[in-house]
Image (cartoon, rainbow, N blue to C red; front, side, top):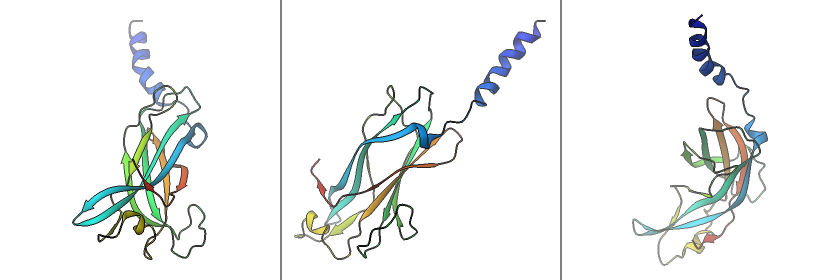
Length: 168
Protein backbone atom coordinates (compact mmCIF):
# COMPACT_ATOMS: atom_id res chain seq x y z
CA UNK A 1 0.00 0.00 0.00
CA UNK A 2 2.87 2.39 0.66
CA UNK A 3 4.08 2.00 -2.90
CA UNK A 4 0.85 3.35 -4.40
CA UNK A 5 1.32 6.99 -3.24
CA UNK A 6 4.95 6.85 -4.37
CA UNK A 7 3.87 5.58 -7.78
CA UNK A 8 1.35 8.42 -8.10
CA UNK A 9 3.99 11.01 -7.20
CA UNK A 10 6.28 9.58 -9.88
CA UNK A 11 3.41 9.64 -12.40
CA UNK A 12 2.46 13.33 -11.95
CA UNK A 13 5.42 14.77 -13.96
CA UNK A 14 4.58 12.42 -16.82
CA UNK A 15 0.95 13.52 -16.83
CA UNK A 16 1.95 17.18 -16.73
CA UNK A 17 4.06 16.67 -19.87
CA UNK A 18 1.04 15.20 -21.66
CA UNK A 19 -1.08 18.34 -21.37
CA UNK A 20 -3.00 19.39 -24.46
CA UNK A 21 -0.69 21.39 -26.75
CA UNK A 22 -1.40 25.12 -27.04
CA UNK A 23 -2.25 26.48 -30.52
CA UNK A 24 0.08 29.50 -30.56
CA UNK A 25 -1.51 30.91 -33.72
CA UNK A 26 -4.80 31.13 -31.80
CA UNK A 27 -3.62 32.30 -28.36
CA UNK A 28 -0.83 34.76 -29.23
CA UNK A 29 -1.36 38.23 -30.62
CA UNK A 30 1.22 40.83 -31.61
CA UNK A 31 0.33 44.32 -30.34
CA UNK A 32 1.96 47.77 -30.22
CA UNK A 33 3.85 46.94 -33.42
CA UNK A 34 6.03 49.63 -34.97
CA UNK A 35 9.29 49.78 -36.85
CA UNK A 36 11.70 51.54 -39.10
CA UNK A 37 15.47 51.81 -39.54
CA UNK A 38 17.65 52.36 -36.50
CA UNK A 39 20.66 54.65 -36.81
CA UNK A 40 23.49 52.27 -35.92
CA UNK A 41 26.06 55.07 -36.13
CA UNK A 42 29.30 54.98 -38.05
CA UNK A 43 30.75 51.52 -38.66
CA UNK A 44 34.11 51.19 -40.41
CA UNK A 45 33.86 54.86 -41.44
CA UNK A 46 30.42 54.42 -43.06
CA UNK A 47 26.93 55.47 -41.92
CA UNK A 48 24.86 52.40 -41.02
CA UNK A 49 21.13 51.78 -40.56
CA UNK A 50 19.53 48.49 -39.50
CA UNK A 51 15.89 47.36 -39.67
CA UNK A 52 14.20 47.46 -36.27
CA UNK A 53 10.80 46.47 -34.88
CA UNK A 54 9.14 46.98 -31.52
CA UNK A 55 6.19 44.91 -30.31
CA UNK A 56 4.49 43.08 -27.45
CA UNK A 57 3.13 39.58 -27.38
CA UNK A 58 -0.24 39.20 -25.71
CA UNK A 59 -1.76 35.83 -24.84
CA UNK A 60 -5.46 35.08 -24.63
CA UNK A 61 -5.09 32.14 -22.30
CA UNK A 62 -4.26 31.68 -18.66
CA UNK A 63 -2.13 28.66 -19.54
CA UNK A 64 1.55 28.99 -18.82
CA UNK A 65 3.61 29.41 -21.99
CA UNK A 66 7.05 28.97 -20.54
CA UNK A 67 9.50 28.64 -22.12
CA UNK A 68 8.34 30.78 -25.05
CA UNK A 69 10.96 31.26 -27.74
CA UNK A 70 10.70 33.87 -30.47
CA UNK A 71 12.58 34.05 -33.77
CA UNK A 72 12.40 37.31 -35.70
CA UNK A 73 13.34 36.86 -39.37
CA UNK A 74 14.16 39.88 -41.53
CA UNK A 75 13.63 39.30 -45.26
CA UNK A 76 14.32 41.55 -48.21
CA UNK A 77 11.56 42.13 -50.72
CA UNK A 78 12.28 42.31 -54.45
CA UNK A 79 13.23 45.71 -55.85
CA UNK A 80 10.56 45.73 -58.55
CA UNK A 81 8.14 47.82 -56.50
CA UNK A 82 5.42 45.23 -56.97
CA UNK A 83 3.71 44.13 -53.74
CA UNK A 84 4.77 40.72 -52.47
CA UNK A 85 2.46 38.48 -50.46
CA UNK A 86 3.72 37.23 -47.06
CA UNK A 87 5.63 34.00 -47.48
CA UNK A 88 6.25 34.65 -51.19
CA UNK A 89 9.42 32.83 -52.30
CA UNK A 90 10.62 36.14 -53.75
CA UNK A 91 11.46 37.19 -50.19
CA UNK A 92 15.17 36.61 -49.50
CA UNK A 93 16.75 35.95 -46.11
CA UNK A 94 18.54 38.99 -44.69
CA UNK A 95 19.05 38.44 -40.94
CA UNK A 96 17.38 36.89 -37.92
CA UNK A 97 17.33 37.38 -34.17
CA UNK A 98 16.52 34.58 -31.73
CA UNK A 99 15.11 35.19 -28.23
CA UNK A 100 15.16 32.01 -26.18
CA UNK A 101 13.13 32.94 -23.10
CA UNK A 102 10.46 35.60 -23.49
CA UNK A 103 8.64 36.01 -20.16
CA UNK A 104 5.05 37.13 -19.74
CA UNK A 105 4.06 39.67 -17.11
CA UNK A 106 0.43 38.83 -16.60
CA UNK A 107 -0.94 38.18 -20.07
CA UNK A 108 1.63 40.13 -22.09
CA UNK A 109 5.34 40.62 -22.52
CA UNK A 110 7.26 43.80 -21.96
CA UNK A 111 7.79 45.90 -25.07
CA UNK A 112 10.42 44.07 -27.16
CA UNK A 113 12.72 45.96 -29.53
CA UNK A 114 14.56 43.78 -32.01
CA UNK A 115 17.20 45.05 -34.43
CA UNK A 116 18.93 43.16 -37.17
CA UNK A 117 22.71 43.07 -37.05
CA UNK A 118 22.95 43.35 -40.83
CA UNK A 119 21.98 46.65 -42.39
CA UNK A 120 22.69 49.21 -45.06
CA UNK A 121 25.77 51.42 -45.16
CA UNK A 122 26.79 54.49 -47.12
CA UNK A 123 29.79 56.77 -47.30
CA UNK A 124 29.54 60.19 -45.64
CA UNK A 125 28.41 62.83 -46.40
CA UNK A 126 25.44 60.68 -47.42
CA UNK A 127 22.88 60.95 -44.62
CA UNK A 128 21.12 57.97 -43.13
CA UNK A 129 17.84 59.15 -44.68
CA UNK A 130 19.58 59.14 -48.09
CA UNK A 131 20.27 55.42 -47.65
CA UNK A 132 16.51 54.78 -47.77
CA UNK A 133 16.41 56.41 -51.24
CA UNK A 134 19.44 54.60 -52.66
CA UNK A 135 18.85 52.58 -55.84
CA UNK A 136 20.14 49.38 -54.20
CA UNK A 137 17.93 49.72 -51.11
CA UNK A 138 15.36 46.92 -50.70
CA UNK A 139 12.37 47.03 -48.38
CA UNK A 140 12.11 44.55 -45.51
CA UNK A 141 9.40 42.25 -44.24
CA UNK A 142 9.71 40.79 -40.76
CA UNK A 143 8.27 37.40 -39.83
CA UNK A 144 7.73 36.73 -36.13
CA UNK A 145 7.83 33.04 -35.22
CA UNK A 146 7.03 31.60 -31.79
CA UNK A 147 7.64 28.22 -30.23
CA UNK A 148 6.46 26.80 -26.92
CA UNK A 149 8.19 23.86 -25.28
CA UNK A 150 8.75 21.13 -27.89
CA UNK A 151 6.13 22.42 -30.35
CA UNK A 152 6.91 23.43 -33.94
CA UNK A 153 7.72 27.03 -34.93
CA UNK A 154 4.57 29.01 -35.78
CA UNK A 155 4.55 32.16 -37.93
CA UNK A 156 2.39 34.44 -35.75
CA UNK A 157 2.83 37.76 -37.57
CA UNK A 158 4.41 39.56 -40.54
CA UNK A 159 5.23 43.25 -40.71
CA UNK A 160 6.57 45.40 -43.53
CA UNK A 161 9.20 47.74 -42.09
CA UNK A 162 8.35 51.34 -43.03
CA UNK A 163 11.03 53.43 -44.77
CA UNK A 164 11.71 55.81 -41.91
CA UNK A 165 14.68 56.58 -39.70
CA UNK A 166 13.87 55.98 -36.06
CA UNK A 167 14.82 58.82 -33.74
CA UNK A 168 15.17 56.63 -30.64
